[in-house]
Amino acid sequence: MTSTEPTEHCNVKAVIPAAGHGSRMQSNIPKQFLTVGGKTLLQYSIEAVCADSRVTEVIVAVSAPDSNDLPDVSELAVSQTVTYVRGGETRAESVCKGVEYALVQGATHALVHDAARPCLPKEALARVIDSGVASQHGAILAIPVRDSLKRAMSLNNNAAHIEESVEREHLWQAQTPQVFHARTLLNGIHHMGAHNPQLTDEASAMQWLGYQPILVEGAFKNLKVTHPEDFECVANWLLAPVTTE
Ligand SMILES: Nc1ccn([C@@H]2O[C@H](COP(=O)(O)OP(=O)(O)OP(=O)(O)O)[C@@H](O)[C@H]2O)c(=O)n1
Ligand SMILES: C[C@](O)(CO)[C@H](O)COP(=O)(O)O
Image (cartoon, rainbow, N blue to C red; front, side, top):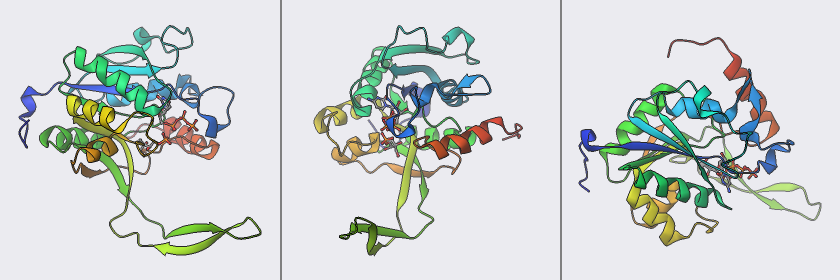
């Protein structure tokens, strides 16, 4: 793997982890299957990663690949092949299953994108692919921290109190997609362990191997739906009139 892989030799396959329970969402169905305008968040996320033709296939890791509740891939407004595989007990394990399948299908690079991030802008997708395939370090979308940061501590009243301020300069919040050489990423996840609580994103696995992924500025609207208020924001963005990107 050279430090600047010629992009014409790249075969980027998207892996979408969508096997979570969405417990923080407190909804009666996993959040990726909540609908906005008649489409699930998962469908929006699949269509979002398919907006760049360099993505040659989409592999979606779900808890029940043969479930009738899954979006019918024939109804998706995409030209790429979409395949469901069985996910795992952790996000990392689901990603692992997806990347293993992507490698069998001939992927050189894996583009991992949360099913819970349906508002991925096309131009941000293009930029993270550009950077991710051009460097052995790979790349992730992220946004610089914009608020003051405080470390919390609990006092005897159990309320959270400020223990200290945390320097926010040079701090970024990681998003997805995260784009890496597929075999290297799989090695990183295997070495770190898919149940390792520190393995919260693909960049962590690459860092474990000594790589320093490129930070590509993403977008605030590329929000991960985690809590109910997030869903309200995302639903408004998805239903807003389409603007030319
Ligand atoms: N075992 C898991 C856990 C999570 N995910 C996926 O990873 C993405 C980001 O994870 P998160 O937001 O934490 O989703 P959940 O684990 O479902 O949420 P919670 O932690 O609130 O249960 C989601 O698209 C989720 O479906 C997955 O594929 N497999
Ligand atoms: C991968 C990720 O979206 C980057 O911010 C985040 O780590 C996922 O965390 P979660 O707790 O599994 O949602």
